[in-house]
Image (tube, rainbow, N blue to C red; front, side, top):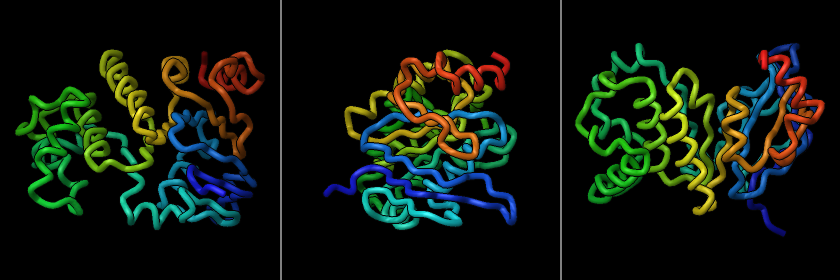
Length: 236
C-alpha cells in the first residue's frame, strides 16, 4: 500500500464555533497540478494552510506521503509561496539572491549558489541576482518567491493567488514554470480566481464551498453546475 500523495479523510476545521471546512475527504495523487477555486469566504485559504501545516484540522486526518503536514514541513517537503505586495517588499533590504537563499539554510554553503542560479533561471530572473527585492515590480517579486520554492526542491509547492494583480505575460511565465514541474513529479496546489487561464495548464480542480463540492478533471468543469455557480460568484 502506497502513502504517496495527499490523503484527506473526514477533515473539518472551525474558527471557534464557526465551521468553515465540513467533513472533506479527497485524495490528491503525487505529481498532480490542482487548482483550488471557490467563492470568497468558502474556505480555500484555510484548506491550503491546513495542507501546509500552518493550521491543524479540528477533526479528521490529513497526511502527505504518509506523514503529517507539520512533519513534511520540517523535512522541507512542502513550500508555501506567499502572495507578494510591493509596498511590503520595499521595506525589506535584501537582494534577490538573499531572498531565494532563505529557503536553503539546510543546504551546504558550497551548493547554495548553484541552486539559487538554477532556480532564478527557471523563472527568467537570473539577471536580477544582486537587485534589491523592493526595487522589483510585483510580478518580478512573485517570480523570485517562486524561485525560492524551486531552489528548495520540495515535493509539494502550494500557492495562494500567485497571479493576483500581475500582468498577463508574467502570469503566463508562472503557469509555464508550474506546468513543467509535473515532469519532476512535484505536486502543485494553487488557490486562484484566474480559473479560465489556469485551467489550460492544470490537471484537476478542487472547488471548495465549505466542503469539496467538485473534485475532478478541468475539462468540463465550467459546464458543470459547480462551474456555472462559481462563474456567477466571480462575475463571469
